Length: 396
Ligand code: NAI
Image (cartoon, rainbow, N blue to C red; front, top):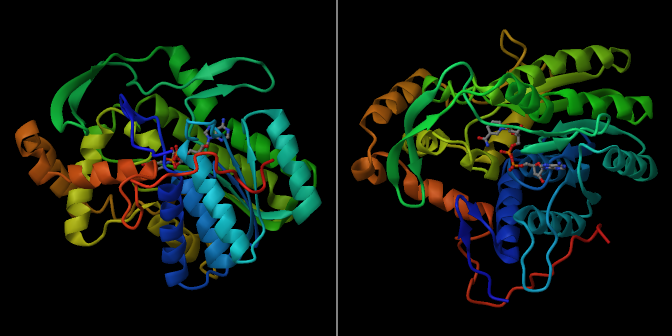
């Protein structure tokens, strides 16, 4: 079928197999151009199909020749209806990895469930024996708790008082005022249950108990801090509480891994266009101003540049992993640098519908957004028929 982007609100409901493959291939080429990273050899990536997780998997495989198992939750295709992009990304990743002689298998299902944990552990036991790196990169709006059976829904709301600020509809470029009512106590609990550290700890506990963690294993989850303009709705909002919990969980996990000299880290990453971040009010406006500033400075990075830097300069730099005073790995350093933040704050004050195309990088934002779904890639002929039924080799 010929596949075109189809929008519903902020979501694109179609995705393009060849375009998604191009995205994966571009990332692989980038990693290869950076040379070998003396990193982990057997890697489990939870949330491996898009965004930072996909780039982590690509960096491990093509930077360190690692065997990878990827866990994700994607919609497979049906005749006439394309799969979700992470499906096609993972198909392309496995195909490229196999061509390069690398082990790569995937599991599609709910990573919060006991069943998917068990399936993953069985696969590790059978094929790899143990893993020496676990990347935890889930971004989900809901979690069915495996022990209580409660369905938790995360929310993106301020805490304590109503929040009002500018935002942009990146499709139309219209800047408007958005107001978000404060959350309830229950909203905070639910958001922590979904995006906090409990499930990460459950994964690591289960893997450890089953003897599937190699000595000196590392595990890493991702967080975000960001500027003051997004603080009320992000870092000091419900999601920020979940990130506080995730960051604190790294210490608990590190304690539990002492006997095998393992360590858990949280890496604070840069704000980037992903399916998760496009849904957060205010963030798209911030990102469009940030992109403009960082591209002008020559310091802009995408997920793959960020992950290569994380792996080569932080996790596997040949000595101790550098962390800040709170124990966090910081690869948001370029975003948070004083000059970038001062410039973005100045642009923020000026931003309105009439000038945003000029002072912000809406074009770059939109391109990144379309790219997430495999659209708008050079070298892909979108007028050609695509096989929407493309399968992931290791998933029967
Ligand atoms: P994303 O939406 O691109 O990727 C999410 C991944 O989780 C996908 O592989 C998806 O299939 C998987 N997933 C979701 N629910 C699942 C479930 N129930 N079971 C199995 N897999 C599931 O998200 P993104 O942006 O890469 O986020 C990853 C992490 O990075 C999150 O913790 C996020 O907060 C963090 N982060 C994101 C930033 C951004 O600007 N996008 C900045 C800094 C940190």
